[in-house]
Image (cartoon, rainbow, N blue to C red; front, side, top):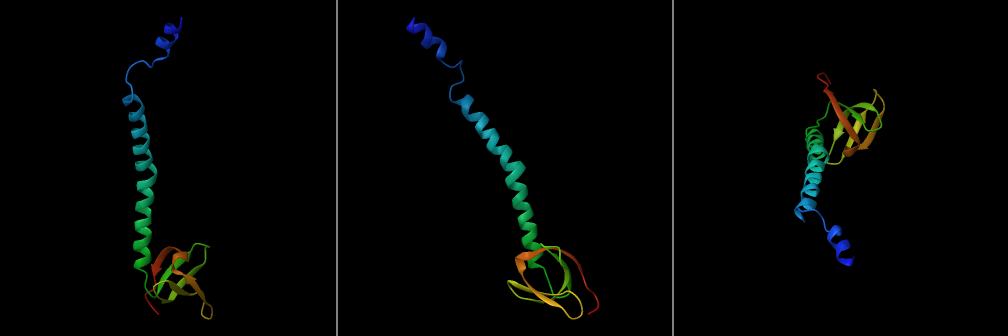
Amino acid sequence: MFQAMTASATPAGGGIVSLIVPLVLMVAIFYFLMIRPQNKKQKQRNSMLGQLKKGDKIVTIGGLHGTIAEITDDVVVLRVNDVTKLTFDRNAISSAVARETAE
């Protein structure tokens, strides 16, 4: 009776390959659906932040619209209206809208 139980408890062929193949497929799916697109978006964002210049109209992460009055490596001063200037971290910029032609 003991031998009958051990014979039925063994897996039906494939061995370790049948365990590794689904794991590899899951890792590949996560890479192509999650990691790779996120890296692509991060590269585009870094490129956009690197190309910012004085006069560009931008939107911050908080939704504030303004024009770049001054810019350094890590700080941006935004002109919100004729009088108000606000200082932000460069990483607080969400997107660049357009470049102002007349200053």
